[in-house]
Length: 268
Image (tube, rainbow, N blue to C red):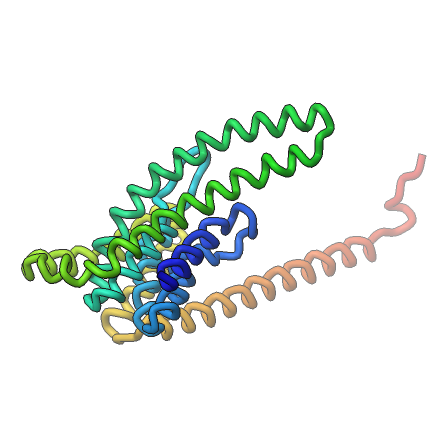
């Protein structure tokens, strides 16, 4: 019961990221899964699952009126059930993705309901009722909190005692298939991210990282550090070129001014 309550609170606070707490990135799976692992006594597995889920959803963003999958609810429930079942990342991905899609519908419902309180806030503002406006701002926040807290809490209560039986009842061939599919999902996350960032100018750096990983067998940390060094070198080179151009322009202006004589200046 206590673990279910704590995990529900983690999900509830996570959904408030970018809504009340500012853009702290606390709601990302990379952070939430770590806290879930800490509550359930398996911090290492929480970090591993959180990193994998972050790769899946790193390209997801709410643009305009679109509502992305609820990776907060999906990530927390997927991580918790995977740790409790002891089946690892394959089960986490298999559970987290469909749960996130289902929770997306609940998020849309909350947004529709919040429109009512938004209009109420406008009416209170016309009457200069600041307490009413403040109340209408906090009610939607509370609804967002419970939209993730309640499903997560119920999933922990209902699934904690039965998750092992449910997972063990799944045929091994299906579990292996889910694991393979789960391992492919990070590639989908990268593809979504590249779809937004990919350009002809940056293409060479993408393939450079791919070649380093494929032929030199460098891990992600080594490639990230190497990429940082390359970015710093390019930045220093560009700044030096700009400084040289400014110096050349100043020199040319000085030379042009020094060649002026009294006869060259026509004052009328």
